[in-house]
Amino acid sequence: MGAPRIESVVDAVGRTPLVRLRRVASKAPDVPVYAKLEFANPGGSVKDRAALRMIQDAFADGRLTSAKTLIDSTSGNTGVAYSIFGAALGIKVRLVMPSNVSKARKDIARSFGTQVIFSDPLEGSDGAIRHVRALVAADPGRYFYPDQYANPSNPLAHYDGTGAEILEAIGDKITHFVAGLGTSGTMMGTARRLHEHPRRICCVAVQPDQAMHGLEGMKHMASSLVPPIYDPSVPDREMTVSTEDGWDMAERLAREEGIHAGHSSGANVVAALRVAEELQRNGEGGCVVVIICDRGDRYFAPMKWERRYIW
Ligand SMILES: Cc1ncc(COP(=O)(O)O)c(C=O)c1O
Image 1 (cartoon, rainbow, N blue to C red):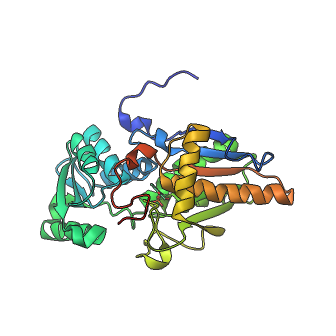
Image 2: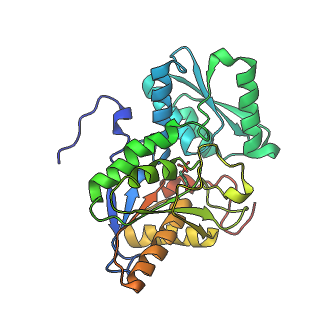
Image 3: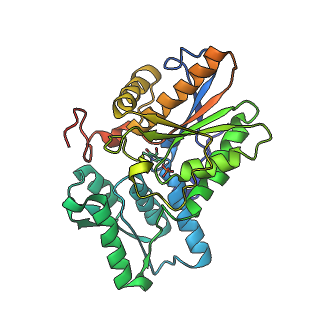
């Protein structure tokens, strides 16, 4: 396959590779486990897909124009994605984040020309959301507020992208799909696409095992504001993973597979290996696909979590 020649960084989103995990999956030698490397997206995470689709759909129906400013309240991967595509497509971007997020988070966004606005650190991410809503309410004509938790373009990016790509790559074999829940866009969109396959594909949704956790990007649904796009009837199975297990697996992925991923990806792989080992024990056979959400280097300067549980 030749190297693609593209017109914009926007065209580099998606078509991420699937790589077979060998050493960490050695207890299930007959059940292939494939990791879909979403860190291969230009912004380094799975959120590129949702951010780009929300921008494109809003452009198409006029909610977003080049005269407007995209505003949202994320210091994480979605903010990086907005910043990249804002720069590439000529859209002004403003991100509200609590003032205590790491310097690295602020600098990444600013390096793309994004304007960073600080909210009260004591109010956390909810305070940042309230701040955005107040700015939008004061001047609604000025802003486009994507609201990824409620925006149908988020799961659609995965229905048309992630899910379709997995079926194209290994649709003849896949029996299980494993992904974590953040906004739930990845699981909702991908599972809906995989469920259209004539053979049953079991979709496994992963959550942290408790409300206070260090698996950044993931939501503990029972203790969270439930995203409007989340439909709990879509996944076929739920699994919970502890922060410690997720962090340990992230380290193993780097050392044993050469895949340096974030901690939530570690948690997804823990769940995927549980599924693969079950299938191996039962002699059922199968093939598991798991999402690797982002790169590990994004967590060298943690936002609020330290390995030793210091908040
Ligand atoms: C770092 C990271 N990015 C993205 C996701 C998936 O997010 P969403 O459910 O919003 O598609 C997760 C969920 O596990 C995550 O941990």
